[in-house]
Image (cartoon, rainbow, N blue to C red):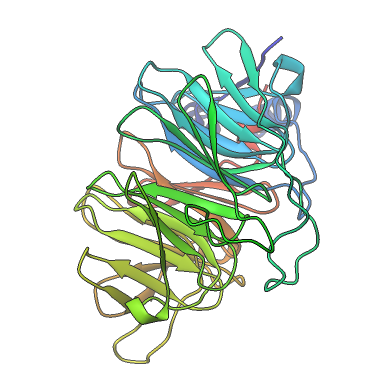
Length: 357
């Protein structure tokens, strides 16, 4: 049974608090205490994706609690108890028919608003991620990234099985086999992010040095230093409203691709580079960047990285995603169950509110 987490309007609480005497204030505090399930989040509790669907709902994926859907008033939690194939969810996308798809630690799940359907991934023969990374064997069924391309096919990035193309019936594998050449394979089998560009090409990002692949529908091109792209371990990719591609790395800064060249984005005054976890260009044209290593959130004005200077910003230290909702609010999520919203004036903490019953 789907568990509902009802969101109580803070405006109403504020009104009551300002008009009541001390006793009524205590009653309100009791009400809040009873309705909010205070949960002690740990470092492993991560809100790692935010996604806006066509109906204006926000979907938040987590690494322990499944998925939260927010309709502007109510949070609804979907988990293994409701049929989700795993509570570890790394990716979410809505298809052209309004079906929600989730990439989890146990493969793909689709959700039609009533029930979940599990779509198993093919079991490929992967011994390990590329020796260049030094990583041990990883889980071949874990989905890390997921998109639906303009032609209707799904592209799926896994933790150790490379990339798959799924047409709704069958899978095509783009797996790098160790020890032999496969021209149409990806550079590495750990695929952290996938993005489609304005020409319909699919960009597949690997979590290893120089792991950037471009698929034009026929062949795979590996981009590296000779193209102006660095060798950073890619953590995220993003297409802005002008069609430019952004690539964030763990150790090589940020790269922007305008279809002519890769440009390394750095502060023009200090030369500082940011290890980027997420990037967003909002409806007003403001560029938001979340950094790794607990360095917070920045705006980028084309020349400099400007730290977000708002009350509560000190808590935005380990952000995994930045997303925009239908009303132009900016959402941030990260470790310790962190979920915040910025409405243009102030930050509001939804970390515990999403668990309201």
